[in-house]
Length: 90
Image (tube, rainbow, N blue to C red; front, side):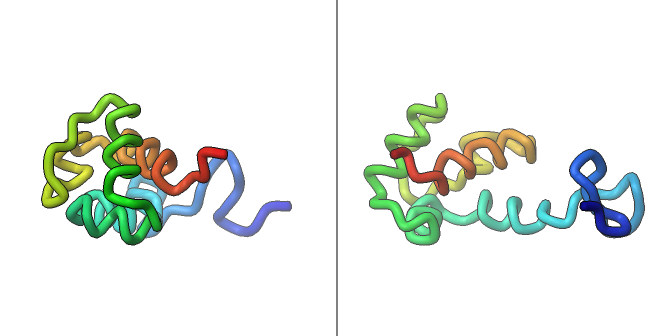
């Protein structure tokens, strides 16, 4: 099933075909938050969050750092890492 302006191959975009996806501001906000805050939002202990980030190849040293500091500005990379943080590892 497809809705007008949205399907699996062409996600809806705000402001036209060349603008960013509608979830981009949310990803940027989560990525800019301190890791301590991100751990709370993801319902992870800070140690578990650091462990998952380390497994993703990042080197967190402080709860005051942000994901965007560690992963850089690439939105896709941030989405991938946030997916690891918000997915139950079972």
